[in-house]
Length: 346
Image (tube, rainbow, N blue to C red; front, side, top):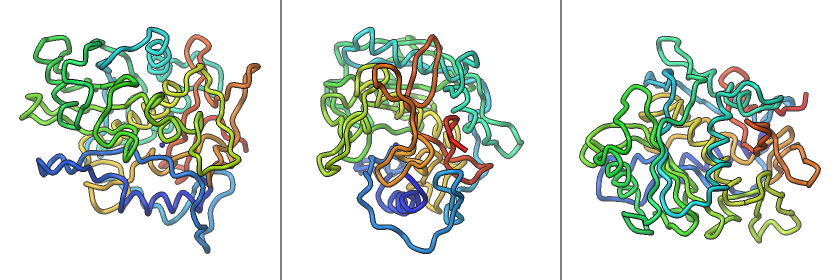
């Protein structure tokens, strides 16, 4: 969830060998779990001899993002939300407004809706584009943490299974996406150490159905310097000041960017056989991974790129529904062959 061209290529190579192998060994299928790689900062050696566009960050002939003939989410997406743990209403509102903003074309430019336009460029083998229509279908609240406060990848699927079995959430094979959001005091396997969020699909043996889902955790208490960057920065990035979050909370504002990252990748690679770079589907580099840490023109090497600031010094790069503002990482464009965002400065 970098960077001028040198760091993007390094991230690409790092992701192929490190970024997506889960720790679970209980099932061969679980080793395919998709992960959001951690911010790597800017302390990486430069790679010589790579030429790229100066207009679009990270453009490179070395990035071979390919289509593997699988489906993309071309039908309107209905998000089924599970709020796991105790969630302040204000924090729910920020995330809910972001999700509503994806399909809202009324926000001023640069907008969340325009940011999703990069995702909508991806097609399946029939030529159908990823949908621009995303809505919240149902929401489930589990403040008492029915599966405990320490979750594994498999128990996250059990959380979804419980909601489906209790008929709190529908089984929607055509439009449904299931999004599990864990509160800041809930620990998750590999959270902060190897992932800030991930996406995959549920196992019939657990949920009874194969359904696309994603998990994202609130890192505000556990590791904001890892998963809420750039609203908190690691100690090794001496001299780099943390940015002020646009909605006042580093953990929640950091989550928004991770949620966007995972939804973009889930839409373009829901069954791990559509859009990704690399030859190994168990360790793919997806459209968000290729642009980790890039939020504006000039981003890379630990620098976010050019972003905007409001009157209170809060940083953002896109506008959303009802006057909300967010900071979202850029995504890889299949047209430009580079990272792109609506706040690009030509």
